[in-house]
Image 1 (cartoon, rainbow, N blue to C red):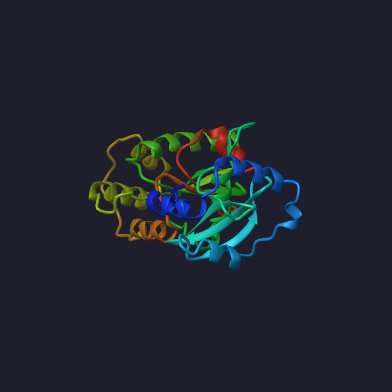
Image 2: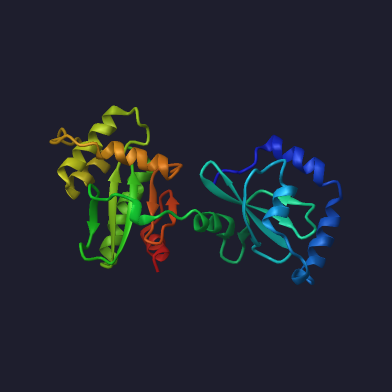
Length: 257
């Protein structure tokens, strides 16, 4: 996830609000754990406090541990969680990691609050990998020339082989819209609607010229722009969560349980 606040803006904010020593924060945060029911923070109040650094507060919820508020802030079509302590004097813009299992709580929250409407995604030109009768389908926006996409492609093949209840709908597109060679390769795969040709493309092999005229690849590029996709590969899970980057088959299947 990209940081919400620039370093300069955050520094100015900290200089304005964080005049107390670090020891005071530890004391306040620990005391707040004993009286969390007494503390309230509305969106309007958070908006006033964060007026210098955030224009639109979407929601305020309890943070990942006592003494912390999570303030969800909208920017450029995405929602980002940032944090304030119960004293309302301290702002934290970063990621909380749970040490017991190294789970990125901030990353999980970002994914959860930025779900997309899966039904609004046109998949008629996607190439299916896996059982045609699978009840769970994962949409994959992927570039056959992207190294991480190539890795993920191998893993989704493994995942589909391991679990017949899961299938993948791959929508090939160039991460660089001006890359004509990759655009042509993606268009050839879409025209053929062939899993083998898709595999060849991700294996770096030459594929035949496109055999049809279609704007499906351009539509996928526009879809990625609409969804604010920040990199390839990006998967859209059945519940609307968007997950970027490569991962192993078992980890991917675990997301679908």
